[in-house]
Amino acid sequence: MSTTTPASKARTGPLAPPSAPRRGADPVRRRGGSLAWHLGSLLVLAVVLYPVAWVAGASFKPSREIVGSLELFPAAPILENFRGLADGIADIPIATFFENSLFYALGSVIGILVSCSLTAYAFARIRFAGRNLLFSLMIGTLLLPYHVLLIPQYVMFQKMELINTYVPLLIGKYLATEAFFVFLMVQFMRNLPKELDEAARIDGCGHLRIYWSIVLPLCRPALITSAIFTFINAWNDFMGPLIYLNEPGKYTVSLGMMMFRDQEGVANYGGMIAMSLVALLPVLLFFLAFQRYLIDGMATSGLKG
Amino acid sequence: MGTAVTTLIKDSPPDAPERRPGPPAAVRRRGRRENLAGYLFMSPWIAGFLLLTAGPMAASLYFAFTDYNLFSSPRWIGLDNFTRMFEDPRWQKSVEVTAKYVVVGTPLKLLLALGVALLLAQSRRGQAFYRAAFYAPSLIGASVSVGFVWRALFSDEAVVDRTQSFLGWDVGGWVGNPDWVLYSLVALTVWQFGAPMVIFLAGLKQVPKELYEAAEVDGAGPFRRFWSITLPMLSPVLFFNVLLETIHSFQIFGSAYVVSNATCGPADATLVYTCYLYQKGFKEAQMGFASAMAWMLLLAVALVTAVLFWSQKRWVHYEEAAR
Image (tube, rainbow over all chains, first blue to last red; front, side):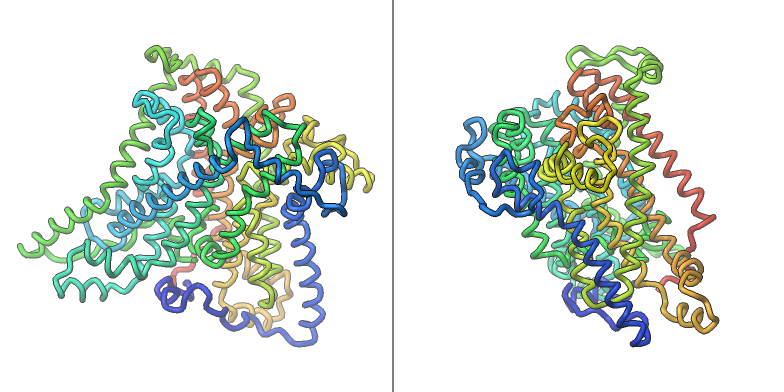
């Protein structure tokens, strides 16, 4: 059904030009329609991007003007809000929260890439007994609400005295529990030509060698997509850190911001908004750099951002 | 993508088992080696499944029938958690709030996603740009930053409130108003329509253009073409989006928590199900009660999933020949 199989995408790269127009509309109707099309699209664009523009503008406004002011960008922008961030939150430098988030995000990325690609390889390229059953179980976990596992997992990690460490947040990533990424990679690997494995096998390669030297390099687009989604999900994660981390020095950016609000709240509203913008920047930059990978990944597997 | 979606929906294995006559010894030996390799490669997932999914599920089911505060050992109390839950007005409130959120938010979000996807599919020029821009909120929507921004935008006398007053439609504020605060959360999820929109767009690309040409020759107007071609051809994708968005919106937590200033209020107006579960489990250490709540959530999600799958044959149209 799909016109660009992942294998062909691997060759052409995600920036391949779009194929020919779907419908040849007649030119007259098209010109009139085109204006309406752009007007409609621009209207949606304005509404969608407003909150992002708002936070950028508001971070340069004095605290008391932020909520009430209707102008998007201040006539006299100030930098106080950003300067104030240098003081940190409750004697903890802002950089600490960013380091913690970065550690969590990069640790998650490594775990997902290793564990999910190994699992996906088994599902896609090895014919073993019980594979179909395990695959159904894996798909089942896609639909399982995480909250059923929340309490017992917490109890377990509490008994293991791992509360207030990053172990509970990271371990699942190293054990391939994020079924979405397994699924994404399975879809990709299944579309690689079988002849590759067969040729390699005749040359005496085992599965580990095929996985490492043939399949992984060809799966780069799927790996990149998974890596970026994982990074962003970990960066945005709120519930996990909220439940497992309880010492401010270990807080991620999300928790640091909640603490900011509790401690300075209304008094330093501008600082809070400036911090919101700074916390969004890594995600926005990733998005600008890799949007094709993200959108293609989303489209191929219905992955949630 | 159609393949991916159908695979997920039909829950089919990676590929159909190969039928072959009784295998000779060499093949059998190779089969054993393949089994070993398969399970070795799968071992992280199997460990994770047992340790982090199956084990905890069993434990959670047990806790649901106990009184357990994390510090003394669980005490079996039968169905007490469930009877207490059903009589608990705050639990009822959380069910009501979540149901309202799901029933209002999900259709609005999907309608907007479908509408914009149909709009974007009309023209190729600029499509990639708009598609990317509309998708961006789906990536940042779950962050605390956006929660803060949302609370600011929907505060009294802030942009939304003043625009409304200007239009003569004053609802008396959003985040401070129990009647309206939930709709600010609905607005937040609808704002993230980009993710399902991308899936719709990919689905629209799969519709064979010959069908439209044939219909046009037969004199079918745009509405008829949408109803008789686009919608049936898109129905697997629509099903996929409905299923995932519904399941996800049942589990809303972060945005309700952040936008309501960690209170899930005012007056419990944003007490979504998981927010109450969090309060019971982690603020009051009622692990048994919280586990019982989690199982009710699982049952509700399973029920909705089952109904959706059951309804599939009435409205979801699968092409027989994929590719």
